[in-house]
Every structure is written in C-alpha cells, then in structure tokens.
Image (cartoon, rainbow, N blue to C red; front, side, top):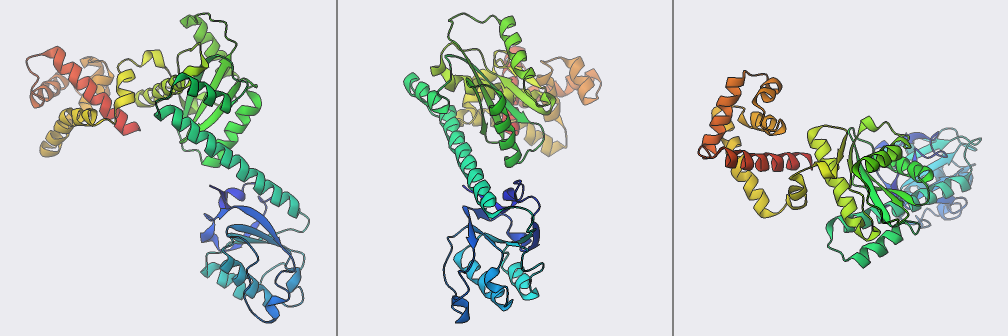
Length: 394
C-alpha cells in the first residue's frame, strides 16, 4: 500500500505545495515520483495521447515543453490522466498560473495539480522523499502483519523466536511489552512518526511497532534467569515509561507480565493488548495483565460462538426488557458490575437512591430467572456484562 497524495503533502519537500485543482483526488495513492521534461513536445504537435508514465506516478514538471505554447498543457494533462497518473506538481519557472481550461479539466477529472516555488524543493529531493516514505510505510505494514500473526496464530516456540529475531536481531531473552491505544484519534501518518521517534530513542534491544491504531513497545533485556518480583517489575516499567516523550495520560496502556524467554513473545503481546483493552473498558490509564482477573479468560475467546450466545442470553434479555418497557436496567447492570456489586457505589454513579438500585437489580434477577441463587446470578451477570463491554470496546 502506497502513501496518498494527502499524506505526501505533509512531507517536508511538499508541505509548501499549493493545490490549485483536483482537490477531490487527494486520496489517490503515489507509487513513485517521476519527472516530466520534453516527453510531450513532439507528440503533441500531431495531438496523439502517448503513454509515458506508470499508473500512480506523481509527476513533477516545469512545463518546459510548453513554455512557448500554453495550449500544450491541456493535452499533456489529458495524457497524464490517461496514463493513470496520481497528480501533477508544476514548478513555477515558466508559469505562475495555469490556463483556465486546464484547471476546469483537472477539477472535472479529480486530478490534483499543485504549484510550487522555483526557489523551493529540488526534483531529486521530492523523488527521494516519496520513495523513502513509501518504503517506510510498506515496512510498517509488513511489521504490522507479523504482529497480527503473533496475536492470532498458534505458533510453536521455535517459530516465535525466529519471528522475534526477524523483528529485531538485537532482542534479548527477557521480555515484556506495553500496548498503547490513543484516547483520541491519531492519523496513520502521525502514528508512524511517533513510532519512528520511539525507535530512535529506545535503544537497540527495544522496539516499537504499529498495530491497528495502537502501539506495541517491546522491551528486552539480558537473560539472567532471575524472577522479577512485582515491586521490581513495576519500578522497571515506570523507568521505561518515564523515558518516553509522550503524555501518557493521552493513552490507555496495557502492560504484560515479565517473561524470561523471547520465544514467549506471542503471549507477551497478547497480554499487553488484553490489559490495554481492560484499561479502555475501565477508563483508567494503566492496567497490568496480572490485574485483569476473569478478562484473562474472556479476552482470548470473546468471539467464539458460545461466548456470543452467552452474552445474548444475559445482555440480550435485559436489552429486550429495556426496549419493551422504556427502562434503563442495562446501564444499571453495567455500573453494578463495574462497582463489583457495590449497591452504594452504583447508586452514586447512576444518580439513584440505593433502594431504587436494589429494585432494578432484583428485576434483572427475575428477567434472568436467577432469583434462587445470589452467587450464580452475580457470576453470570458479571460474565455477560464484561463480554458486552468487550464487544463495545473492540
């Protein structure tokens, strides 16, 4: 997958380009940058449209071939559109503005045309920067696909270790990871820039990777085969997080257990991702995997049909009652479980009298036909609500 024109506009060499036509075509992808020089000079005298460029090229030109004949510009733009070119950038050596018919045609075809200053970017810098950005993006995509394999596939220890070394040959044996999810949307390009900044600062035995809008940071250390006591591990985690340049309050952060072997990297990544999702559900900044309780069982299997069916039996029946009678039992149930069954705390959150909360909980017991066993009721309601919260946050 190549960068789009919109992403390219954020590159240093293109950031001062002025878009003059084809603004609806900014989502076009750019495979490479190419230079248009004299290609159209002779062919246009006989008016055939020739093919000189590859599909999704981004063409740069001074329009030198048309310096004495502006009528050649429209025909050349038609030729570029026919070639499937992504867009055109014109250096204002011979033209400060383009003919109206060229602008109208480009707008009609959603073909982006830019003007840029002759005292600004050099052709070779534009070509190189677009090439480097595409290479970086493709590498990030490749790494992201490997993260997906580790998260979703059952792999033997040897395969996991080989993949870990493929990520980073300098990875050590002891390992843990952070999974960071931005609380507010961050576009793909900005996220990639954050990851690149991490990787410049982290050191050779640690690495950061992108995965579906999140960031995994893998920390590895020399294999000393010493157990990490909780206090020591938390101190290590805080030390690592304090070295990051981000405002950690802007992220939900999940932290895996400390593992002694890099061939457990797949478990490490899953643990930090599960912990991050629980942090998101509970709306807190940081969650350790060792703290997520029954979510350790629910997170890996929430998409299984038996889990979906169980959630439907619990939450689905409460929803049906709410829809039929215009009640709000589901919200009360969610806050009741989040409060660990504390009626007083639930009442504060939903702004009701404690007796009203008790009435609602008893009504839920009746709906679920669990009036004879308090323990069984809370257990099943807790699992059903937690599955519901997972589905709401995935």
